[in-house]
Length: 322
Image (cartoon, rainbow, N blue to C red; front, side, top):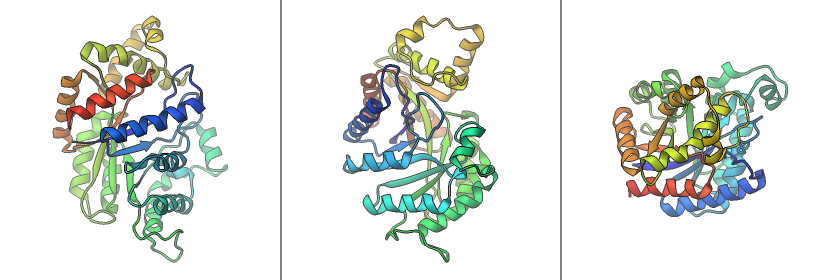
């Protein structure tokens, strides 16, 4: 089992953005020592508690303070940006840290229409142009075409497309790039998406298919401990989906929160996107999903209030597959 981290930099209540940035670098160095293979940063805008808004900058900061762990984006919101500029940033990172740069890009608008427009400097929506922009990005990082992006590195950075269904999987396969499925967003399409990617893959940037799966995981000392820890993540996700405070609440706040029947039902529905349990349950579920998806490469999201508990969760997960 290959393990990495996908970090949305979900900020606990009572912690500043500056403190969050320091804790994130510390966490990444910690999981590198544990043996995790990669650390990816998400891109979110217009929220109060998701601190990762510029994955390229976080990648540079982290690569400079670690030794060998791969650093990546999960993912850069390509429809809002120039493919040429994104390529130049990725190539610059590759020149600084050869072989450690993994570029994941996605189709998300990054927020509401106001946020999307600001990111795109007022230009009309280019969501439908994602396939063309991704093709252009691939050409630029490979040094193809009449205009080449700089710097011209010896080897291109790795490129992945993030997706939630068969269409995105097929497009990544046809381009010969990697594919990351968001189980933590839409788990019902996982098996079909991975299968489509494998079946339609054509050698390109990669000579063989490279697929990964991103999932929420909380691994406690036992099932009961994990359930207690996960209450903060449950409430956090509920608030995020409602467009409310996206900072992570404490377990105490989550336990004291009076929830409606529909909110409790929504939390249980969202648990399909997560693996919550003690070591035995977490290992069983990861192995079960790996068998279904035929994928043994995982990006783990753990959005807890307590950073020490987050570290311990990642430690327990890694120990399962050491």
